[in-house]
Amino acid sequence: MSFRTAFPAPLRGVVPPLVTPLTPTGEVDVPSVHRLAEHLVGAGVHGLFLLGSSGETAYLTDAQRLTALEAAVDAAAGRVPVLAGVIETTTARVLERAKDAVRAGADALVATAPFYTRTHPVEIADHFRRMRSGADLPLFAYDIPVAVHTELPRETVLALAADGTLAGLKDSSGDEGSLRRLLAPLRAAAPGFSVLTGSELTVDAALLAGVDGVVPGLGNVDAQGYVRLYEAARAGDWDTARAEQDRLAALFAITDAGDPAVMGGSSSALGAFKAAVHLQGLIDCPATAAPQVPLDAEAFAYVRRHLVEAGLLPA
Image 1 (cartoon, rainbow, N blue to C red):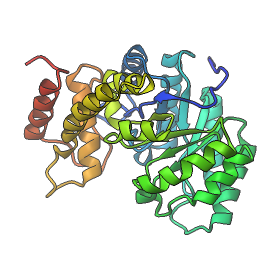
Image 2: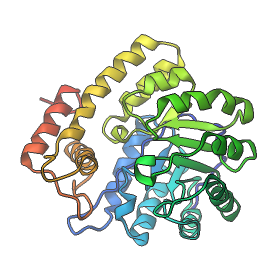
Image 3: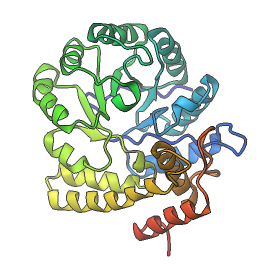
């Protein structure tokens, strides 16, 4: 069943990028997707982002992606918009995933520039324009050069915002100076354009600078904390926003749970997010997709300690 409603312009608030719960055998755990999505909506988030980096989209099959997205759309039931990551190497592949997202009832699409092959800004712009014309849903650009190896050019974003190709930007560039320089001309070119920061640690500063919201992986673990931060910032209560950001920054230490001798930082962070929501009873199994190394018992204990310190688990 489709619950698609009018998409807000701009989209504002807290839009957590859901982890994708898996069973011990590696299949998508649909009941856990429902439980996690329901919890986040109940916490007051303003949207849900499926199949991003925190959702392990690069590790999932096309069928698994579709299953997770359909489950989240069903759970959201039109109460908040659902953004679907359609992240693939080339335009043709992205358009195939976009067709799935449209059928699943997603409210908007999120895509990166092409990757593996190196692309020119003219080609990047054409990539997004072909996506927008091929799938009649609002389209967000996902700027994540650590994975794509190309930072979206400022002029390209401005042009695609001005001509209506893009409805928004999810900025995970890590280049806060470049983002700050983009905001003022972007507001002049496209007032309804939405800018969402992907940085969990500088949300208060980004909101003060003028972004519309945040897409925090840590929001799976403490959605209410990010909602409180956002609401305080919107009210101009920057002392409360700063205090909430400080608390969340301390909680972000869970991403260091994994042993760097046997796993990378991404696997450690994804494992920690899943361990945390498992310990909170939101998903049944904390498994991450192969070939990521699972967290060991010591790492789980580390995550648990931080949840207790943050007031998210009883001592």
